[in-house]
Image 1: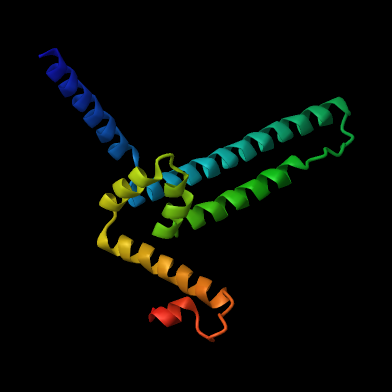
Image 2 (image 1 turned 120 degrees about the horizontal axis):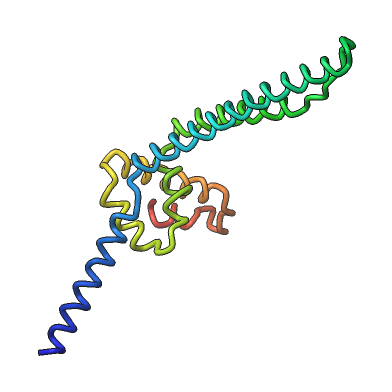
Length: 165
C-alpha cells in the first residue's frame, strides 16, 4: 500500500513539475509584449535621467554664476550628449521591438531556454497557425540559402537537387 501511495505521490509531483514547465514558456505574443514594455521602460528611464541631469546642470550653473559675481563660467557638459544618444538608441530599440517576428522569438528567446525539447513542444502548442507558417517559411528560406552557398558535387547537382527537393 505504501508503494502505491509513493508511486501516486511521485506521479503527482512529476505532473506538477511538468505543468510548471508548460506555463513557464511565454507565448510569442506575451514575449513580444514583454519586450516592448521593457523597451518603453528603458526609454522612460533614460528620459527621466536626462531631465534630472538637466536640472542638476542648471543648478550647478546658477551656483557658479552666484559664486563668480556675475562673471559667466563655462560648464562642461558631455553627459547631456551621452543621454541624448542613449535616448536615441532606446527609441530605435523600441521601434525595432514592435516589428519582432516569430523568428526573432525563436532565435532571441526559445533557443536560450534550458530544456529545448520541452520548450519547443510547449511553444509550438502556443503558436497560431500563421505563426507556425512564418517560422516554417523562415526555416525553409534558411535551408534554401544554405544549399545555394554549398559547393555543388561533381555531378553538377546538389544533394537537394538529386533528391528532388
